[in-house]
Length: 513
Ligand code: HXC
Image 1 (tube, protein in one colour):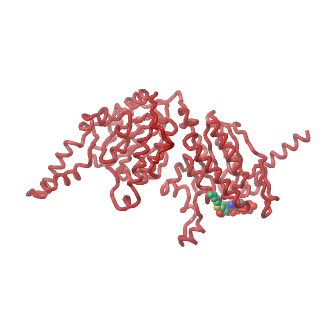
Image 2 (cartoon, rainbow, N blue to C red):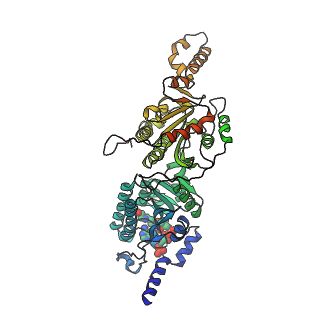
Image 3 (cartoon, rainbow, N blue to C red):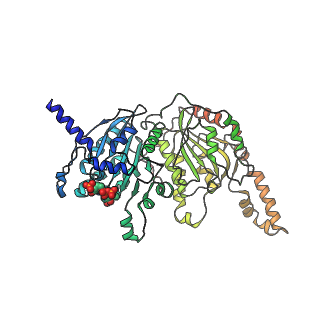
C-alpha cells in the first residue's frame, strides 16, 4: 500500500507542475495549462503519458533544488477522432517551459515513436526557449529536435501549436513542421525579441507587432491558422486533423457522409461578372463545387491573391489552390508563389489530390518583385506542381495569361485534366498589351492611333480571349458549363483514383529555394 501511495504522491507532484501560483498566473493570462490543453485536444481519456517522472540532471545556478517530475513538458500519445497521434505540451509553469537536455530528450522520444509508428506529431509550444542555466546541452537538445523534424518531413504530418512565447532557436522546430497555429494576444514567435531588436537596429517594437499571431499571419506567413483563444485553437487543430492522413503511405480519412446543396450547381453560373475586368471572390466558386461547409482555408490572411486550403469532394479530402481575382486581380507574386508551392508540396507528400481554379492575369511586374527574386520564387510554384504525382485537375474560370498559365497546373506540367469555362481567356497576354506590341507600327502610322489600337485590341481579343484556341490544340481537355464543374471534378478524381506515377529515381530534387 505504501508503494501505491508513493506512486500517487509522485504522480500528483508531476501533475502540479510549477505549482498553484504559477498555474493561476497562466490562467490569468487567458492560457490553459499544459495538461488542460491536452485534454481539449485529444479524445476523452485517450491520452497516455510517457516520461512523467523524467527529471533534469543539471546542478548549476541552484537547479539541483528545482526538480519537477516531467521537467516542463508533458508528452505521450492518444487519439483524435479515434486515430493515433503523438503529442508534447510544454508547461510554462515549470522553469518557463524552458528546454533542457532531458526535456528535449522526451520530445525526441515521442518524435521517434511517431515516425516509427506512422502517426502525426503535434507540438504544443509554450516556452522561454533554451534553459539558460544548462547552456550548450539545451542547444544540442534543440538541434536533436530540428534533425528529427526534418527527417520526419513528408513522412508524417507535423503540426506546431504556439500557445505562449516561442523565442530564439525555438522557432525553428515549428518552421520545419507542416502547419503552425497561433493564438491571438498570447502567443508570439521571433528569432530575437524586442529588446535585442532595439539594441541592434534601434527599432522600438512590441512583442505583438514583432511576432504576434496577426503579424505572422499577414506579414511573414509563418502562421497558417489564427485562433482567438486556446480552446478554439485546439478545436481547430482537431478539425484540421480530420482532413489529414496518418502518414505518407496512407490516404486521408474518408467520411462516409457528406452533403451538397444542389442549388449551388446553378448558382455557380451567376458568380462571374459580365465584364472580365471586374473582380469576384473565387471562394464563392470553390464553395459551389465542394461538399457543403467543407473548405478549411490555410494561410487565410497571407498573400491573399492566392487561396489555398483543404476541402472535401463526396467526402474525400482534396487540396484546393485558386487565384483570387478579388485581391490584386489574382496576380502571382513572390508571396503567393511561395504560399501555393508549400501547400502543393504538402498535399503531394500526403496523397491529397489537387484541384486548381485559375484566373490569373500573369506575374506581378516591377522592380520590387524582380529584385527580390520573383524568378526564383515563381519557379517554386512551377516546380511544386511539376513534381506532384497526386491526381490533379485544373478549372480555368477566366484569365490564364502568360507564364502564369503554364505555372497554374497546366497540362504540360503534368495536370491530369484541364477544363475551361466559356468565359476563359487563354493567351500570351491581355489584348490591350498584345495589340500595343504587335501592331505598334500600324497604330503609330494610323490617322487615329487610339481608334486603331482599340480595333486591334478587339481583333486580338476576338481571336484569343476565349478557351477554344486552347481546346482545339488539346491544351485544355474540355470546355464546360460552370454548372458541370462539380460533376466533372467528381468523375475526374474517381477516374484518377488509382493513378500511379513516380518521379525519376533521385536522391531528392533541387527546388529553387
Ligand atoms: C530558464 C526560464 C527561461 C529560460 C523563462 N524562465 N525563460 N528559465 N530558462 N529560457 C523562467 C523564469 O526564470 C521564471 O521563473 C519563469 O520561467 C517565468 O518567466 P517570467 O520571465 O517570469 O515570465 P514572463 O514575464 O511571462 O516572460 C516570459 C519570457 C521571459 C518572455 C519568455 O521569461 C524571457 O524573456 N525568457 C528568456 C527568453 C530567452 O531569451 N530564451 C533563450 C532564447 S535563446 P520563476 O521561477 O520566476 O517562475 C534560445 C537558443 C536556442 O532558445 C537555439 C537553438 C538553435
